[in-house]
Image (cartoon, rainbow, N blue to C red):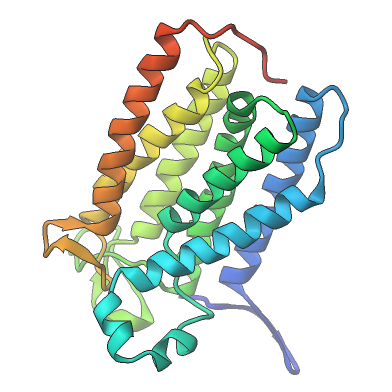
Length: 254
């Protein structure tokens, strides 16, 4: 759409990279401030953020290649060619969460309260990042005659659903709801698992309108992301009921 935000001499600032960077910066400041408040002033190591970045990059790229394994196995040279672009959110998510749990356990920190904070962190990065997808012209939707239809360079004159904006708007709504929930949460882990459930539900809906090349478990019916979302929704409901039944003691998140 508008892939280049600024071009001067030999310097080009791309919209996607700028918005991703801005999202990470805002989310990082929020996370550090909130967790250090919860830890009564104890500083959060920057190594924590470095680890999240590495796990997110590796997971996002790995799941991107696994969407079409046969395609990349038959043409391995394309792995390096596509290395700078193409990420799968759930790939990043599924590697980042185990890393966070490991890090907190290693440092003798309670896990669920921190995950509650990081749920909101994730919505910040993701909502702003999807705006980057819109300006970058990726992750677009199927052809539509609806008033919201947008023409991207890759759609060659065809108006399509701006699914990036749909998803960004949906995530901002989830963020707003989580901030409200934070004031009246009943047990640690409630915010995080609520986020996981709501985003998975949103992703299942959005996938029906995606028009770029997707990986499918059942061609044209169930994409990889929808399958993962269904599994995650089921698991989040199970954990929500388990935590609620155990009546975890309430502890205010700053």
